[in-house]
Length: 506
Image (cartoon, rainbow, N blue to C red):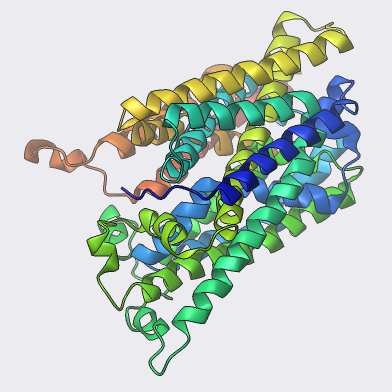
């Protein structure tokens, strides 16, 4: 395990960063006097700031470590996910944003109730809340695991500290604090990435035989295989471009159409034009940023290709290479900056998850079903209490993950089951496909069954080999979405004759 104590200068940088975040929360507390200010910052955020906040929701400490690790182990196929954002952003701006802005939506799941009924809203909102608990837990656990390699603190203490700092400034300042701290965190994150790019480039492009040649010879700059395959066997060898296109389109559609994290941010600007601009700003930063993350992974492969340093250090996985590089190669002060950037990437995702979860709990559950006439003051109190509660649940789940070594894999399987139908419901709603209550529930059930089959039906005994799923795991959600939409459309087609008959009788 990598372990190198941070210099006091690096620790001071991290402490200063945490103090600045809390200070910003205190500063923006006076601007969160109403529920709408807490949830959408009174719709006063400029497009460029909302764009940076949307971009930060796309990135996290997972991206900071996992994306370079994927390029180190494989190639540049994750860039396909980023490039798929371009057509998806166009569709979102063309069809979803105008409607969301016209209706002045705060919770995106109220849209489902209008088009499908309350069952669609409840299912999607509950799925989002469960997904957010897992997302908070995964990010807090992984960033604390990284920090535990550099400081002599128990990982439980680190999880609690990072969770507590994020809860405090989100609790105080609401969405305005979330967005403006995301702006600061984005700047720190981008600065850290750019430093690593320059630092590594100087080393792999110098000399008579540049180290980068090793990466070129190994095909590390490839975008993936063009083989017509969607199987998991292809993923193990060289994930295909087709898999990444399916994954990129479906996941980006879910993010921009159906994820409260993203919708709530671009609904915090004054008008529709600026909402669209914020999306394009986010995407046009995220795409090159992903390329830089991938370049770092490829550069790390080249940097360590000349010797056996990683083998001696027992660094065997791509995800461990970047932390090892930070620990052993980055100088004092700059090391603190990069670790602060990774923490910033984590906190910028967690703060948004907390604020949006509190919003959904208030609007889609408490106000909708328990207390429709709740006062402004009580609403604000509920939002702040929900922020603390959901932060505590996510922090607790992160601590639980320390003892459950398989918790991460199990969580992603569960989140796939919960989230697989969300995108399908939104597409059906946008296409105005009408289904009855029981038909909608059956469609969701079919989606869950398909996702469960695709998730768990792997490496079966010989007698059950016929039922085995060979789909690449990252497109299981797309399979669930397709199953839900196909089932609902079949029901809708059977409903049309009955509707026509009733009109004729009338």
